[in-house]
Image (tube, rainbow, N blue to C red):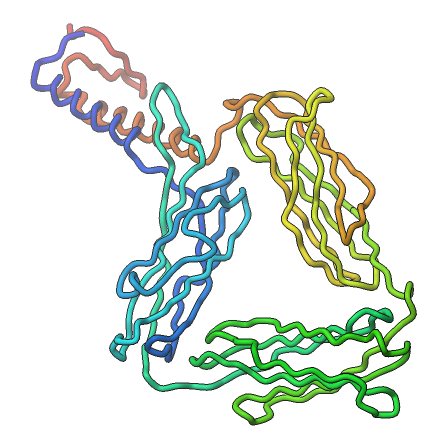
Length: 414
């Protein structure tokens, strides 16, 4: 097969361009950021405000996310809990952005953005070449700075309940600061017996609620000198000397042993198969079947051929009576084979029965990830581009003949 030098050079350039499309096209990761934009009205100069975003990883593998604030708010804002962290496959993560304008900030509207980048934890390679898969999105943040103070403290909920004798009566108050000034409410709690006589009281003025935040205050009243029986608890809240809230709730002191903490591990799940080097999620469902709130934590170990290869544990969660919680732990297998995870749930110094689940771990390469499929699609597109180009130039390239009825062949020019 022979070509004239001009046509041959043109063809090589087309082939090179198609190959460049194949290896240089950026991979796309399926990630999300919500909401797309937020608007904070009336933040004080030298004040405080915060907003939150949620990021979503819809990929089949964990992704590394990094965040930074850009634009007018770059010097005023910070990202919490940290600027970079790992989000497991098909999970979400809440991100807080704290904004603190300086005292000398001018009144007006400021525009900023939360720049989000995500990258695969490992690189995908193929045919001797590799490329880190990454993508990014932005959330918009609009802030209106003012020097006008606004007081607006809301009480969202108050809670108390029955306790066993010699245990304190616990009162919880949930505040939300909807203004732009730091709020320090004065909270008064009074406990009365069935006859209405005052038996306990407590005041607190040290609790501070920052603007735009929602926080719980917990107060404990000792009961060592109180006998079992029915009582009432009155919670009064004052802001700057003015009463803004008052409510009376029933309470009860019970004999020792009347209340208890019970729980069960009702379900344990894990993927049937996984690849070496990938993160495997072990998820348990814990049911609080007792009459008291409790903390719960998944704990256990993973073994291969009878030998322990990794301990696993979840974060500790608080579970209300009659409620259930999902507890998730992760491990990263380094060997092929059938891995067995044996776990239980620790709650209030107690332990549920043990359950186990199996995961068959294989070597990587048998399946394509989202990034690998993308490169396959791009490769097919590049080959199609080459074929269409050669067909369009069939009359100018003497070494190519196209036969009838859609059949073609490559051969020497006669």
